[in-house]
Image 1 (cartoon, rainbow, N blue to C red):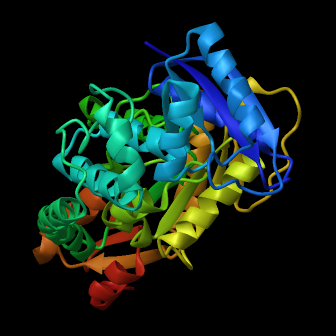
Image 2 (image 1 turned 180 degrees about the vertical axis):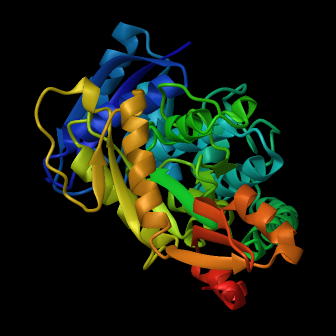
Length: 413
């Protein structure tokens, strides 16, 4: 296990420095790094050589030696020359928050698509830092910040990197085309779609698993869940059928985090396109986190960045069982629950059904007896309210979407 000192330079003066450093510590733990000590410094300007003041660099060097640290992680994004200068002064590996997040993504990526997305983001990160990283990676024998391109011991050559980036983008483009065809087929089916979004570790995968479990279908299709930042990077899509035969496609997306590297957002845009085509967004909020209001803001800002606009949103204030004070929702419609409790899942299902199927109407259809297959279809695929037999045919009261109402308008009584 790596042992790290965390360093944060406070430029913003927004009162969130403690939050940023807590989150950096959580990111370190997610990468199996032991945090030995956390240091911060308020600065008025960035210094070109070290980012922070030289006095602070000496202090970090002393702590690194005394605590036997083998890595220093900056919360701030560093240039290649700053990384090289800091490593020369401190005597241990130096990485920044962006490199740590990229490394977590590199470790967690399981699908071909995710691996390509992460590697492209790593190359984008490396390009402007070639001179500094050439020396830094040259000292490394694998480890933090060296997965992906570094692990292959690429020569840090601009032309080589740009060629690799073009090749990877072409591979990613082919995968994206195939997934777009799958998505197009789902769109043709006219089934409603929801996307589960939110900060990392807020409970998105927990909700998807709960939806699968409470509808008693495809229990073996549950997704991986762990109490850790970025436990999974995979976009998981499941077909949910309610007891009343209403159905929708639910997609669990990768979580967001403060200062998510821009290159990573760009690389993952193809995956996040699932969100832009949803009929409804389910925004999961971790109310047990003191800074959950800031997390809502970060998530909404990231959604704007990927082009999500004018899609209705339900806010699920989760983990209410872990706090004592009363929560006052900032956004509506919303529900305050614990997704680990059955009652909480029922509340979420109720509000999803209410918002997602608000265009459904009660309709009375008269189906002639010689078209009995339609009666079977409605019984298997719609919510039947009542059904009786008359001299003219089967009279069915049911709920239909606008699309189905239009399709079977000639049977409307």
